[in-house]
Image 1 (tube, rainbow, N blue to C red):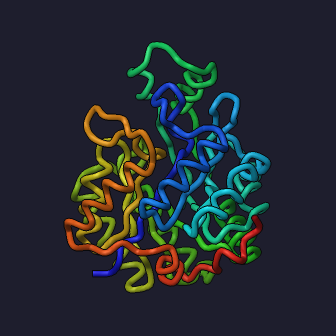
Image 2: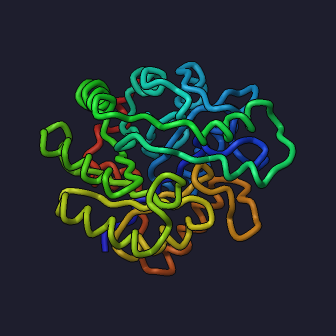
Length: 308
């Protein structure tokens, strides 16, 4: 079995401050949480930025600048900056940070989709911040946009222009075929890092047969030219990533994807989630990849070639 790359998604743009007091929001919190995850075994750190005042998602490079250099100085993990940002942002806003900092990796959603966050409204009666309720409710009528032109733009400006490689986020089977389309056009070259995502309202559901199906289709389309990783939202996280690891895949965990450590118990840090999945991998006799091993597997340009 190959060594398993652990990706930790540190904060994201899905959860809001009311949902957990442990969700990193300020640059200090994001930096500390990311470094802790790396020290616990995460080889890749997937990063969003948040407004330090109210915890809302922000694309501002100045906010990224407050934590990216600190993380790089403190650990050797691969830094992966989102190009997804949030559905409320334009494509130019979403890629402003990545273009400014030219990281080794960026995430890249492989299509436009409904992205429903509004079911969380049923769980809370009061909100810490004024923006939260409208942000969640607005997802009923909001589309996350990533058209073919948007994807081409990101591949050209970040991939070709900056030497950045991608975590190709595939929320449904059609996204795998979209990735194959860009491979056929020569705009993406192997090895591909394919992140299959389950349990987001608007994407493929969290059913074990879907995990097997996504793996079969990825094998059909990409053969031996890709590295496969699994993430699942919320309560589905642990069982899905464990199943994926047993099938030879890599894993993604973190407070962006799931706020809990176990049923009813909030995770107090990203490091707790990394420690948990690492223990499971150890018990399955699966070795965890170091950041340098991940760089080799994914043909990354190296930490010395970034812009921060």
